[in-house]
Length: 405
Image 1: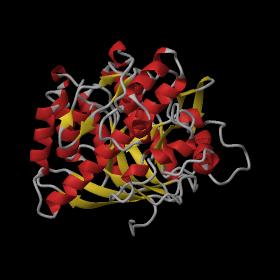
Image 2: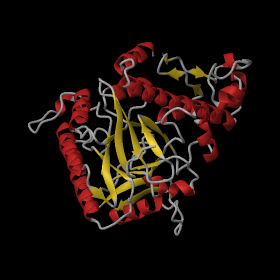
Image 3: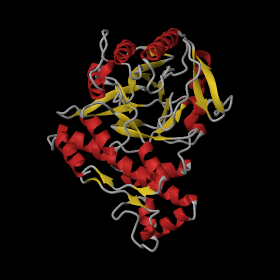
Image 4: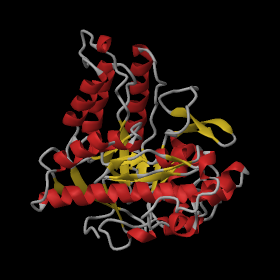
């Protein structure tokens, strides 16, 4: 358990290649969030197909491994509007019976966010009841009710492919909102670690200005929380022709490398848009990301796939449980896996559940896939810590993983 104050991020181990382990001391009763880590996406605080009491049991086989505990929940701020009843002052985690930390972000990583009205005092957000405008006063009220452990500042996010003028306007709007939030005499995010997003879309020169703004905000107190983290979008779409007279990046990969190098080392880095295991390993190896969104295991379960994944052996072929060849299989879901789904159920049984559209089939795949992903990140943390203690270089482990996948 970290001894840092609530809302603090501290680095505990480094590898020679730039990979790092850390701890986020959260403000609730959920202990701490170990990094590298993935947060489990939710809809209004509920993990798809998994009741709150089951979510905590997913990682039960990992008990005793350093940094493992109830998984962190990813909450989209727009989905949480009007969820916590008025007068309930214990926060969203208590209301939704979540045992792990809660990270509240602006944009849903698994959903295309529609454009809407934007200004220097409000943005349009997606909610379960449609789009609505969220202004600074509404945002502060939302944070006060959520009492999340990690919160993202209100931000104008341009759509993919937006032009330079739209990206520049998004940065102007974001700057105005952040200045207003920093000036507000309010404690809505007290004790939370605050995230500032790099914005600018596909415009390299605007991204550079956004990074400069994030550097300026780092360490500042906003609504009672300290800006100690940054959301880095997937900038691989930044094209070579984004280099202008004002500056820019030669390519998307150059943009990502430059942004990672320009950000303060002390900031928690939430890497958005990177989902595939080999992409995650590469991002961790290069020090680009500390926290990732766990949309990959959810999407695989929705399609009927069971993941076979380990840092030591690479990513094997997914098991498609809808395939008719598994109709009479008495083999466990994945041999050797200690999760509940694998220990108690066969491939044939789960195949039957899927083909008759019984939701328990998807629920069992969700249990397995999320366990595998959490175990994968535990392997990454242990490998980085082992190198710091004189073990094998993480760069070699990462190279072997990507070669085997």
